[in-house]
Structures are given as structure tokens and as C-alpha cells.
View 1 (cartoon, rainbow, N blue to C red):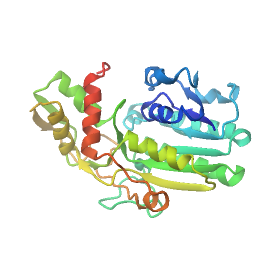
View 2 (cartoon, rainbow, N blue to C red; view 1 turned 180 degrees about the vertical axis):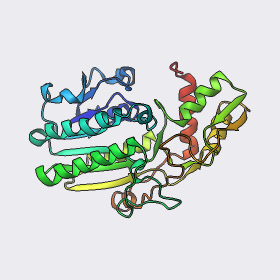
View 3 (cartoon, rainbow, N blue to C red; view 1 turned 135 degrees about the horizontal axis):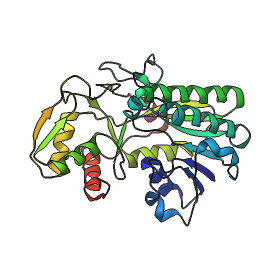
View 4 (cartoon, rainbow, N blue to C red; view 1 turned 90 degrees about the vertical axis):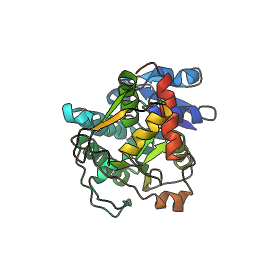
Length: 308
């Protein structure tokens, strides 16, 4: 099968490349703004790698793919607070350009969306079709807009889509997020760790290995139409408990301080839980790596990573 992966040198994309490379013809497009070529260095002799911007995809020489895994995006929710254009450009406009390319070239897309599209939904576990979307970050808004674009192209041009709304993804090659922030801070000041907010913010953390297995198994199965799945671990964890796992793995005993308030930054959703019953019921998918083990795997990787 001919597979195009956008953002294939990134955290999740590189793991997907590694799982698919031996059995498929893989083309990766990545501008390396956040991805790293070293993440896919072991596969470069088996894939076609294009360093470039998807905005220029129509000028690239690409064989018609059977399916596109669209992972390229601005993945840092906080980034949109200081740069209000980045989510519009990297998440909405780029997706539009890809869909324009697809009209005559490819009819199947797997898109990685986000739990942030739901906004603040209290303490309930949110199902895919049972909540009004009220994103409170530019990132969440841009992911929702990209989903809607894909749905329009499904209706108007027959493009089949599988959309996965991610919770937090952890594991080796992690490039951003609270686990990385904690490890970086503790490397600099091992006796003290400042936690943004009150430490009660609660999220789900899914290991990248389980995430990629869902993308691969479901994305490459025989399907058509348009379907959305929440993708997250059934376990959840508050930030203070996460911090204690990180410090335990690093064998540290810091003093904890808190910045206060119920959220870590503007646009942060303090409590996000996704109901994953649909993906289990329809596809049989469920995670195999516990939340705690995934966090520890991430810490071990970051302790050896020379970038922090």
C-alpha cells in the first residue's frame, strides 16, 4: 500500500513510520519545525522523505497514495496564546491545502484531532456525538475547524475519513507537554518543582505505542465513509500525582510549589475525560500500557535525551 504521512518525523508520526515501513511504501512530508530527522534515521533508506511545507504539496512529485495519515500540525496548545496565527496556518490552512491535493489524488485520510475541541465539559466523560463543541483555545478551535473541513470534503468530494480525537499522548520521543516540562525543570533545580495551577488539573495519558496501534489497525482496515473516535486511556491522573511519578522515577524529593488557580495557562481545560466506549465497541481497541508506566517510559527517555 502507498502511504503518505504528514508530520512523519514528529513524536507520533515517527513511531507510525516505524510500524509501517516494512510492509508499505512510505512517503513522509515534514518541514522539521518540530519534528526531528533523527527520529526516522533508521528508516531513511526504506522511505521517501520530503522536507517541505504542505502548503507546497501540489508542486511536490508524489505518487498517488492509497491513504494519507495527516499528523502535521502545531501540536503545542500553549503556542497559540503568543502566536495567534500559528494554529490557523498549521492546522486549518494546511489541512485545506492537503484536501485540495486529495480531490483528484487520494480518497482516504486519517486525521489526528484533539480532546481540546470539546472545551470545558465538567467532570463527565465526553462521547463523540453527545456534546456541544466549545473550545477555549485557538488550538482546539483550529482542530475543530479542520474536522469540519474534512467533513465538507467527504460530503462534496467523496473523501473517506477516520478522525481520532486524542487525549494526552506520552512515551519516548516526547517533544512537548507537562512531563517534559517537569523533567526539564528538575534537571535545573532538583530540589524544587513549581506546578502551574493548583495541581488538580486532570487528564488522560495514553502511551504512543497504544496510540499508533489504533491509528494503524483502524486506519488500514477496510472502511469508507466518515467516522470519529475518541482515543485516550481509560485511566486518568491529576497533575500533582503525575509530578510525584516523575520525581519518583528521577529519584528526587523536591519541595512542591503551586502557581495557583484551577488551570495552568490561558486556554487550558482543567478537567478533560474522553469516553472511549465507541472505539472499543466498534474496533476492539483498548490500551495495553498503564498510565504510570507510560509516564515512567517518557521520563526515562527524557533523562537520556540531550535536548533538555
